[in-house]
Image (cartoon, rainbow, N blue to C red; front, side, top):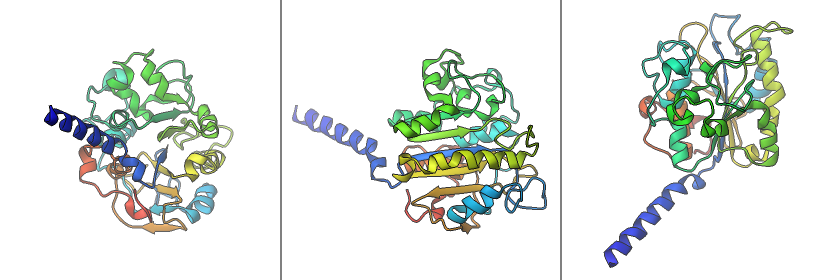
Length: 308
């Protein structure tokens, strides 16, 4: 009986240590914003972000106070959009090289980030622009593109592609709810933010008619809400990146803002991919195993003074 009691106590202590591991970390809340289809630097002047006159907020406001890297790439030869979103969630594209919907590309595996988080009792939400919030958004609607919403490609999130899945509906929410969640202190610990096709630099839309300027304007209108929130100031980190390059594999942008980031315009030239970002998030939230490519990539810790 004594052995059973000791074994039970060990299990309780073990689970407690695992569930409390992230509480010892500096970074408590993560926000990631996904932009679209632009190189960070290079000869592609019309589609490059760094130094672009169409991106004054990124270049003149964010970069001087952020850390960023000059050598962040989408995984080699991984195109178009969907495979890169899946890579950020699972460290692999599952062999997918198209943008087909979940009805074609759904995955049965539970080995992906938000399920690891959920199992570790780490809260998560995806904020998707242009969804209703009344159904699990398994198809395109308005300027919402399902290919930019990786979570609905996993059957354990959607209850096998059920548009009425309560778990999916509770976690994949309209972007319009982010501001009130921040104000009310109900934001999740991991927050994946997807602007719509006009606001993420994917399409040219009226009245601006310039994809880079549209995205830069959207960031200027929405990033301050995050930066001024208690969730950000009390241990938050905001990552802004792009899904893939417009030409080749990059480099693409990765901008990090946090009180724990080196900031002040710090830049490095370390090679990173989306596997690096996934590894970084797993380390921040103390979940394992490192998923697929995340196990072999360098994390983003060099962009921080204190990590995780």
